[in-house]
Image (cartoon, rainbow, N blue to C red; front, side, top):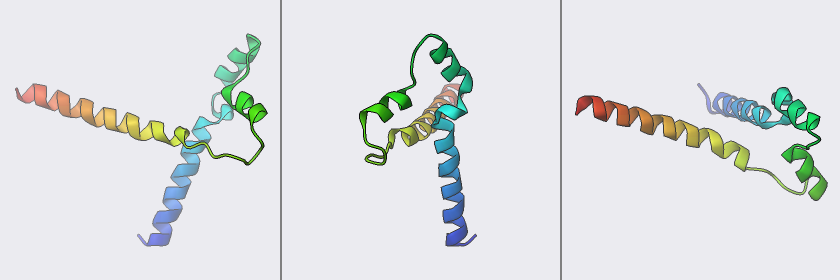
Amino acid sequence: MGADETTRDELTELARRRALTEDAARPEAVEKRKARGGRTACENVEDLIDAGSWVEYSRYAIAPRAERSSRISSSRTSARAAA
């Protein structure tokens, strides 16, 4: 696998992860909030800032944390089994 192909694969994965954090990826939750007269966090942020004036990075921090928790959990399970 060449560097260009690796970069493309990584960008594709990044786009996939980003799409999962958008309101469109969770229509049931958005509809439930709207039915109660609420707004989504994205709508609130959009009203507070100028379009294109910031980049949200926190949406990408969740997956590694979950991945790390899974590894830690697995290693603890293995350690208990060996004890």
